Amino acid sequence: MKTKYIISTIALTGVLALTGCEDFLEQKNTHDLNQQTFFDSEAALRAATAPLYNYVWAGFNDKFYYGMGDGRANNITAQYSDYIYPYTNLSETSLSQGLTDAWNSFYSVVAQANNTINNITDYSAPTLSEDSKRASIAEARFMRGTAYWYIASLWGVGIIYTNTSSMVNNYVVPANPGVDVIEFAIRDLEYAAKYLPKTPADAGRVTCYSA
Image (cartoon, rainbow, N blue to C red; front, side, top):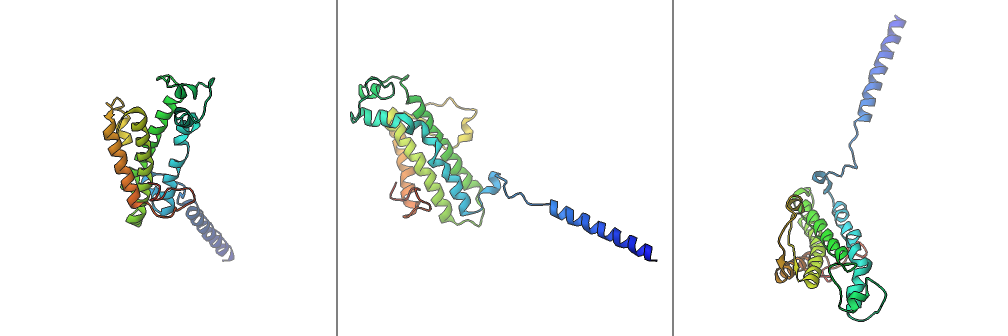
């Protein structure tokens, strides 16, 4: 009788152990970056807009910004610099250093901003407030508007689009006139001025006064 009791106890312990292991192994993945589940908090919204302050601007900020900016304004001179002198001497061509980098940089900003805007619009959790969503969209539209303002000011034309995925298989698109690009940039910046907060959510982020 005692033997049967011991065997029953061992069997029950084994069943409980297996059940406990199954419960332990069935864990929710808290690091899933699926766009359909990512936008569930204000912290997630801030994480989505944070890259717009970073590397996407590198090709513009690296050399072109002061080559075309201060160089063209004759605030600096560098006779033997191939990324400053052409701009100070008004002799830049399509092959001048920095032009392609800047163009690519601006459209990296546009592409990233489009993705951020569309993902927040389509995939935000219902628990997020409209004010929070609008503020994050305004942040992305500020960046996109700024990029388009530079594009129109520097090249006189630009390719306007708001859905990055639609460009993957349709990348030969005619340019829009400069006036249309400027108007598009103004609409983005007006939206940003309306919905961005007066004080930044984190240090260094844009506010309504930035727009």
